[in-house]
Length: 398
Image (cartoon, rainbow, N blue to C red; front, side, top):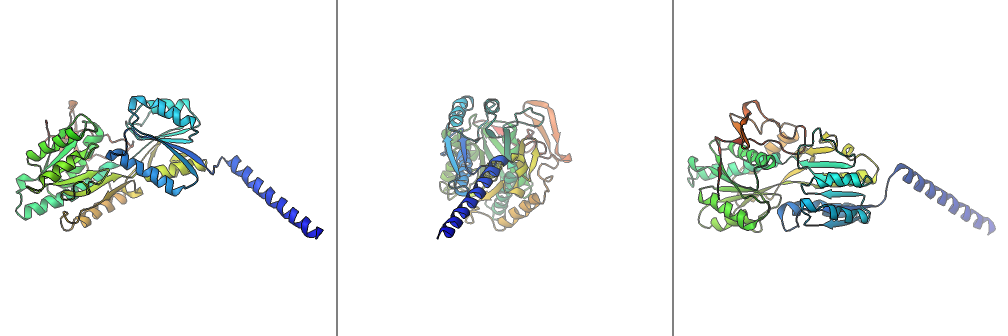
């Protein structure tokens, strides 16, 4: 009995030694079995942009159940992010994600060198001097915009072939917040997708001067519809444009193309398709990198420039959702898939290309000849195409 007892004790001691050795190696390697993660939102989940970003938090909870503590701060305005960051730092966050466009995040990274700060890019980061613990990222949204334009073009072609509209009435509208390069890049890619199917299509753009105003967005969409637009898309945050389309669709055929969040529930009669940036791959990989003491950028196969990363369909950073088969023209899915496959193969030079001249709205002497082509997101994750194709795009006032 004594021998059995001694053997049992010896076995326990050996197992304890092995456990302690593994624990020590884990600590020496810098790996962690648990993380505290913070999310700072510039708005709340009732808006499309923040809702879409919050899906990454949900995916993180599912993937790391029990291994992450998550803290969230919502409605953090760009000039007021200091307090939420201090709050999350006090809670012991190892990594913080921010979906707003504030310079203060980079400054706060200097104050907390042991925390990794990951912010959706808001400017050209190439050549920028940033702290090692500050990272920027964004999906290459122009790819999704272009593909959603193909879906819109297929629908317009159907309307023309059925005699519902004439070729001269192939007009799409776009509700835009501000004339930033991100917005201009998106609506230009959308129109060029449309024109790849309907070469005579043109676009009217109406700016709201705000990212999130239901009344102004709906009013802008109604203005575009009154001007004869048959399909509307947006780069703003509320359901206003979708509702305007839905209310109009009872009297004449109009359709809506969503961004960030599907509008099929609020506008089932007019919704066509949704393009969205998928934030989940970045968030999951960044958390995994911190948990395993790796460089965040080493975890990605996209375009890496220092601590800035972008990717598109090839890495599932962009996707198309909710193609409404009740509204979509026959062959739409196949046409979309063909373009998506080109993107996945690394062929991106066909989007911003054609017999077009773009003009910088802030400086008419600054032009871009698209006969030579333009590659978006080539050196930075932030979209830089800021030229309005004046021959085919008209800016209208509300």
